Length: 136
Image 1 (tube, rainbow, N blue to C red):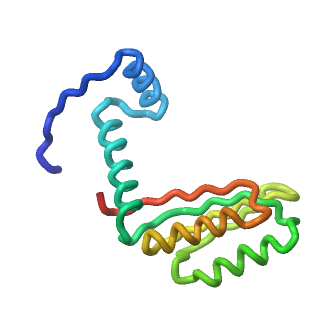
Image 2: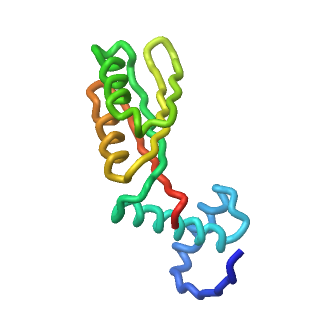
């Protein structure tokens, strides 16, 4: 591990209490690791928004498989972008609803465009894109 540097942070007591509750709920045993994770998340977000580095992520979709032509549209999008898709998992949640998780990899702009297209496909009830990079 790299050398550690100590810093001091002035923070409103009410905000600190809320932060402590949040990190306890998430299982952190100390503030330092929680702060490090917050900083890492911001650094990944900065890389994501300002560069064209290779990114990895998941696109999570919930949809009604009875929606007209929806599964065909989603499949066609995935085939069109097959070089960006590592894997996908399809789960039948109940008689009507499906969950699909698609693992993606590629240049930030390309992967974001694909995720947006999948999530915005008519009939998708809920979608979320989560991205990360091995670079900080």
